[in-house]
Length: 77
Image (cartoon, rainbow, N blue to C red; front, side, top):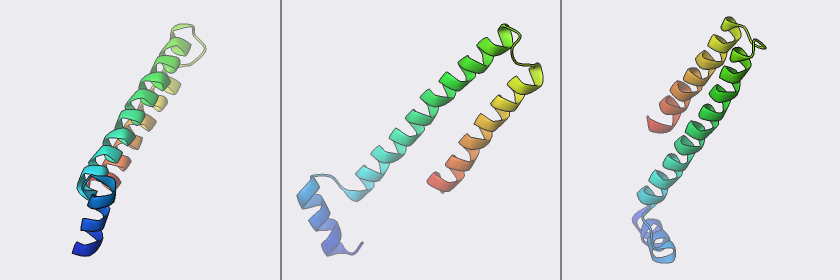
């Protein structure tokens, strides 16, 4: 954005572009945290009731960690 676009954005929205970016990033990571807690709870309850094996539970955990790493790399770099 050039200076005129940034000032027009701030005048119309009341927020700076970097502030909006921060809010969006926080929203994405908060949503990911809630989703991963839900997925881990579901996987753990499946494992506790012997519907999932230890390997499947580990697979869920590895996929969630990979998702965190990929999103962190793409969104925060």
